[in-house]
Length: 152
Image 1 (cartoon, rainbow, N blue to C red):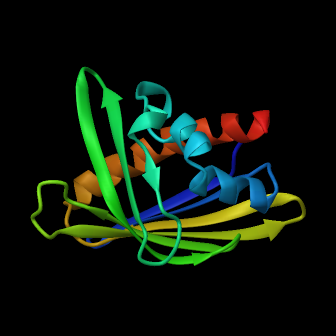
Image 2 (cartoon, rainbow, N blue to C red):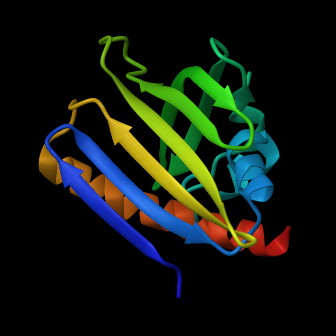
């Protein structure tokens, strides 16, 4: 069973999860578009590789289009910090241009061949209920990441 804990506050969410994979593989799952496309969205959605663009460097942009239940959901943002293979900070911006954004932080710790990931999404742009729903969504994303990592 995968070790995972989560916390929700009015400002966002945090998730700690242990992956049975080396830290570099987990880093690659976050930063390599071909791998990211396989897990982002979980089992209920797809992210076609041709919709992904990653410029993984501070100030670099990223975007993706998730296809789910007959809808297309655009995702976009900017990489703020890139410290391979330890820390990744990026924004998730409102594609409609409201100026609202959430900040995602991924910290990866080596744990004897496994990787402990500390993940947060902060910004306060969602209600506490929506952050709880987002935690559930990320659980499916990270379950899919487990499968991608098992095949690596």
